[in-house]
Each structure stands twice: as C-alpha cells, then as structure tokens.
Length: 304
Image 1 (cartoon, one colour):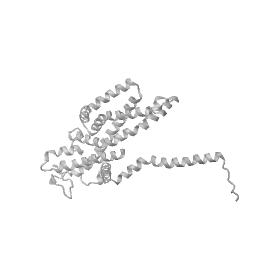
Image 2: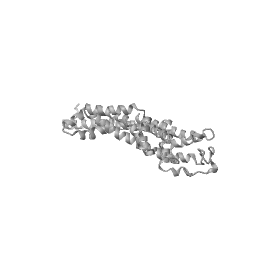
Image 3: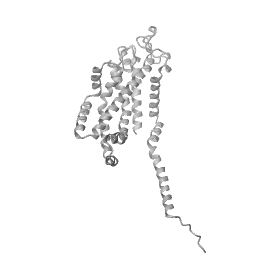
C-alpha cells in the first residue's frame, strides 16, 4: 500500500512556530504571576475581618471628605439644655458638658486626624527614603554618618521624640504631623537602605554603570523604583500607628486648641466626666481603636 506523501516544513518555519509556541506558553504562565499580588489582595476580601476594616476606613474617609453629609449638628456650638445627655436616637454618642453632639465632633475631627496622618507618613517616607538611598549607594563614610544619625533617632521612643520636636516647633495639628513624621524617618531610612543594598548588588545595576550611566541616573531610574515597594509596605502598616500617635499628642494638648474637634482632644476634654459622662471618653476612644485596628488589618493584608 502506498504511503501518503509527507509535506516538508522548512526548518526556519519550524523554529518560528516553536518560538511562537514558547511565547504563548510564557505569556500564559506570566499573566498569573503579574496579577498574583492583586488577585491575592482582592481574594482576601472574602475574610470578614478585612471587609469590616475596609468599611470602617471608607466611612472615616467619608467623614474626612464631607462631614456635613453624616451629621446635622454643629461641632462647635452646643445646646445648654442638652448638656451631658446620654446616648440616644437623637444623639448616638450623647452630648458633652457644653451640650455639643459628641458624634458630630468625632466626625468633624476625622478630617484633621486623616490629613495629619497622611502628612506625617509623607514626611517620613520621602526624607527617610532619600537618606536610605544615599546611605545605600554612597561610600562607607557617608553611610556610617547617616546610619549613626538613624540609630540615634531609633534609640529615642517615637512619642517622646515627637513631643520634643512639637515643643520646639509650636503647638497645632500641622506641627504635630511634622513631629510625628520626623520621629518615623529613621525606620523608613533603615528599610530603604536595606532594600537598596540588595538591589545595588544585582547584575543589571552593575551593567548600568558599565554602560557609562551616571550615579544619579542609576539611583533614580533603576534603584529607587525597585526599592520603593519595601517602604510603601512599611507606610501601609504604619498608618494606624501614626493615627494613634497623633491622637496621643492631641490628648496631651499639643494639637489645635479647643474648641477645635480632634480625636485626642475630644477624649481629653471628657476625662473629668468619667462617672457622669462615660460616653465622652469610651465612644470616641472606640472610634480611634477601630480606625487603628482597621488600618493595621488592611496594611497587613496588602503586604501578604
């Protein structure tokens, strides 16, 4: 029986087909890898704790952006006839010693707290990243000087360092944010330096120098973008702690003066009424705790 004629495929066509198949297979394998982080993060929303954390943070963000949508009471002006009223359907968080709605003051205070936290994180991230980048790419002398300064910053408790700085700068929420940001520079610098040292030893960085690229170009075009992921992860984890630190300084009287609504000062203002008005401390305190825990939960979920 005669065998059918076989069709000879040129070797070049075979190689092109093999390369195309390899590219298709590589694309199929690399697509899940590129989207792995986002897919894992979105998948975490099936966990009730993360869903609750996101809901809490979105609510607080809404308070910060448009507080008047969430309350009809003035946070400054009160009604003397309703002073120290217990929580009710009319006043969910009760009223304070001046008849002001406590929930309204908490809602309006969210804006100051969130803005201060963002400013503090930005200061710590930018300054700390620059110091860590310079230390990681410079010689031993510059690296030693910068890291000794960082060691000094890290040896001082963050709250104590913030108090020292805000005392020198003056009182106010913006000054508190700057002080908290300065207290966090050391941690960000150390993380950035560690990441830079790891990246600078890779072959493509050495090849960049071999091609004649300048140190500044290599640092900002190749090293910094790859090292930022570490400090951004630290920023997401630190947000809740920064909120707590700002509220603590406000509680101690370093924030905006009364009657400006701030979470720390609201709690401090009600500490003299712990028996007759427990809601002045407990309910705003629960809000602060919920925000801090939610921010920490979201930060850890993003890093995971």
